[in-house]
Length: 426
View 1 (cartoon, helix red, strand yellow):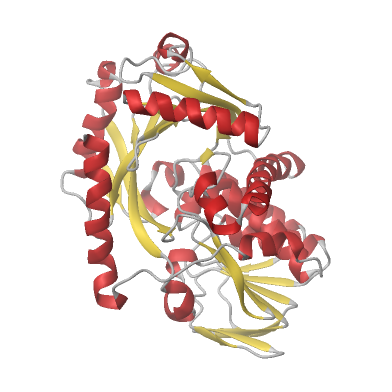
View 2 (cartoon, rainbow, N blue to C red):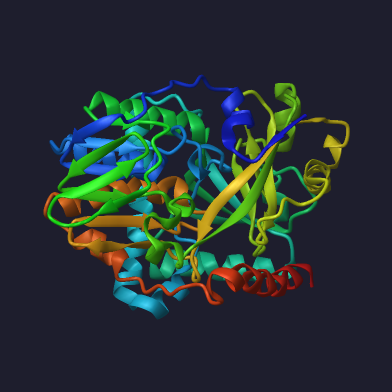
C-alpha cells in the first residue's frame, strides 16, 4: 500500500500519464497571467484564450497537484454553504442567481468534456444519503426547497427500499437522487482541461512558484527563474497561494481530506454495491463519500483533519468506515491511500473578488469545487472581457477572516469542529 499527501502517488496519478511542461525562465509578456494549475486556473485560462487574450498560466508544482487532481471527483449542484445561509447573506434574489449559477456549472463542465473530447470517465447520477431519522426529514425539506423555491426538478426522494437500486447497503435510511450531478476522474479531467487550454494558445509553465507580484497598470509576476508582465492577473492558488496574497489567506484555511482506493473488483461484484454507478455522499457535517472507478475499484473518502496532522492508522480507519457501509468488502485490500488540502471559508461559501481593478481571485470552494471552479473561470473571463455582472453576484457574498490570527486560527477551528463531530455522533 502506498501513502502520500500529494496527488503524485494517488490512484488517480497511477491511472494517468503525466505530461511535463517547461519552467518559466526569463521575462515573458501576456495579456493575462493566471496563478494555479487546477480547474479554476485552467478554466480561466481556457475561457480567456477563447476570447482572444494571450494567457500565461503559472503552476508551482504540476497541473492537478492540488485538490483538483485528487478529490472525490463528485460533480454536485449547489454551493456548500446551503441556500438558507446564502439567502441570509445576500438576499433571496441573489441566492437564486447563485443556485442557478451552480446548475450552469454542471453544464459548463459537461460542455467542456464534450467539446474537447476529454476522456475522464464521466458518469451521471449522485445520491445524498441519510444515516439518521433526522436526515430523512432534512432530505424531505431539501427536496421541497429545490422543487418549490428553485424549480430544480432533477431531484427525487428515495425511500429505504428504492435506495437499494443505487446503493446496496443497510447503513442508510433513504436518499436524494440528482440525475444532473455525477462523478469523474478528477486528474484526467484536469489534465484534459490543460490540453484544451494549450490548444487555444495558453502557455502553461510548471515548477514555477509565484513568489509575489507588483500591481499597477502593468502587473509584474515573479517566480524564482522568470517574470511575466501582464495587464491583468487572476489568482487561483486557493490554499496553496500562501503569502502571495495575505489578505486572501486569512479568509480561508486548508483542511486535509483523505481517500482510499481498493484493489479492482470484478464487474459483477462492483455492480452489486452500486447498481446505477452513482456517486454517493452522506449529509453528516463530516461526511463519507464514495463511488466506483472505471476499473471497478471502490473509491471511499472521508476523515477530515482540521489540525493539519494526518490521522494515525489512516488507511485502516478509512477501510473500517467503508466496511461499515459495505460489510461484504471486509476481504478487499486497500491499494492506495492519499489526501491533501482543500480550502474552506468561514461560511463555506466561495470567495470571489478583486484585490485591485486588474487583479481577480477565486477561492474557498469548500468541497464543491469540481464544477464551480469551471464556471468561475468562465465568469472571470467575462469580467475581464468587460461584462462583470455575473462575476459580481459571487463577489457580493460577504467574507471575514478566520478568528485567532496566525497562531490561534487553526486551534480555534479544531475546537469549533468538535461540536459538529459530536452532533454527527449523537
